[in-house]
Image (cartoon, rainbow, N blue to C red; front, side, top):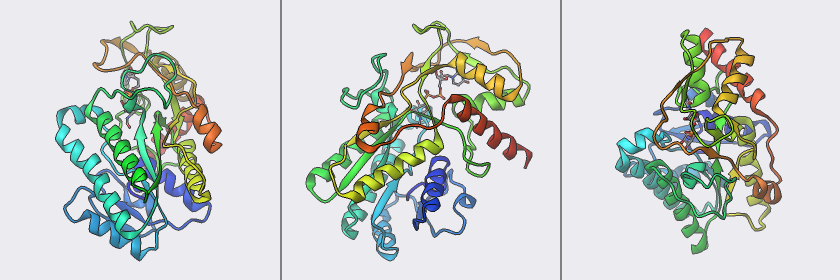
Length: 320
Ligand code: WQD
């Protein structure tokens, strides 16, 4: 499990442990929190470093690993626009080293963390895996390049893999596992409300019913379960899809998200509407039919449960 000490990784590790699997975590701890994986073997390794492939091979052999879940990556769109080469080195180079280490160690099963960012602006219709991916920033490009690299290794005959295209991940399974970086709408709104400030809406003149952008929010605990579904499908040995969306198929506008936040938190500070944020597509929703049909996964939690769990985690972390 790479990136296991991160926000999403911590939830995947918890889900694996819950069903009794043994896990070894590889994480450079640049944003990861070791307490999230306490009690587990933790190898501190930057997958983009020169000797990473050898380190990966050694870890896989030592722990007799049979499958890899790869989440370690950089994931901030704005930062990727500022530092594209670094994003390519970390995300694409890191994956290359991982695959080289897996091939040397003879480990053939992989779950790859991809992103709805591969779709770019989308069509306005629910995004389907068969749509032509057109990322619009280096972050999305690195995820698409990762899918291509994984696809090449699958065609080369030694790898079996599924890329999970995450939509807007939010929520928390516990205080320890909660997202610690306010880089997305829900945690940013919490931070602002907590500071007595109004949440900001980046544009209300989009071609959507209330004028604000629509996204598909998926609970991080549901997302974690999607990884287990992939591991099970890989272990079963049958055919697997190359890439699947992980979303609910239902979209909510920024105004709807902020209204639910108001209900859950009881903080009534009205939002302020500002200018559009460059690069935001109006609507990005998953067509979630493939993951249901091929992996038997569907989301259990809706927007209110996502926000309530995120708020519990946020409050507990701030109170600590
Ligand atoms: C959601 C909506 C904003 C903050 C990004 C990446 C994507 C994936 C998930 C990583 C947008 C609006 C936000 C605020 C607002 N990343 N907004 N006020 O942009 O859909 O997706 O995170 O794996 O690749 O692009 O998520 O949470 O930033 O924004 O109005 O204070 O909320 O404009 O419409 P986004 P987000």
